[in-house]
Length: 366
Image (cartoon, rainbow, N blue to C red; front, side, top):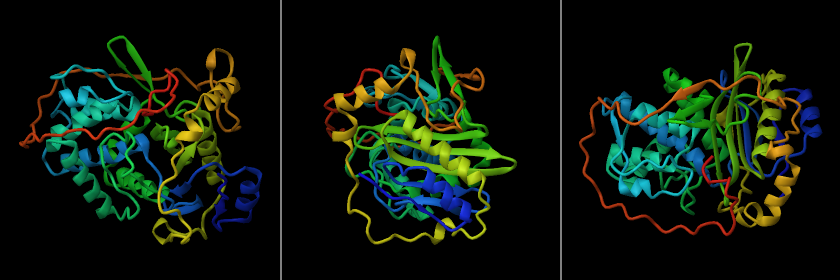
């Protein structure tokens, strides 16, 4: 699948830089967060499976509930039996365990745990289905016209799709409506007991100025990334969807951001001015036959360095982490805030086929 890049008219340099960098596999958008102007876009309205980028909306719903006074950062999130049965990536907490909303958000952003995402949904609204209604209501309020949410974690469902343009709208809303919570997006690592979990976003410790935001991966979706960075007081946002590996999504996002910092963007359109081309596919592309095969993972593994270390092609990514990660502890307990008074619904999961092949080290989530 080849998708040509459309570099929007910002400066002649943009065209030269774009021509030197081959187009990636999937949709992408590059936005100046200060102006809301789009510096680059590739198929911004094409439907795509979000994978764990879904958890951005899950977290946004939590922020809105906090603002409305329903909960606080210290409110309880209870792990139900249903939540404990979610597939990896997960924390593995036992049913009945309780953590705070604050720790839940930290875990969602770094570990991308599916069990915690379901627990958040059930704790706030009673069930995943009720929570999905809130997700879709927020999407409609923000003008995310190409998005529909079905679950709070992003485990594959045909009904759950987004667009790169919509994800950019959501990411901007999260930063603009709730600037006090931006620290969640740049957490470098968390520790639970003796288990250290580093952020799946490789730009955080390898790209100068990186400060967010979220990763996602499933076999049908490929490797996705919403990345933000700030340099010289200017903040940019890159949405990258459908890449073939962790390295590929990091390379593409780093290259986009680096190009963007060299562009003034004076003549670029605003995000709200983008319009579909009319040639978008009717449904999202399922990458399972491409991503989750022994042949693909063999090629990815062979391209990596000694001991399986990732090898990046972007000159804007440091070969080694720029520093040791700053670690934040998360733990169960400590929930002293109010609990929403919601009914408990029967929430029977919809069966979802497992991938035909997934390496043991690559749990779907981040």
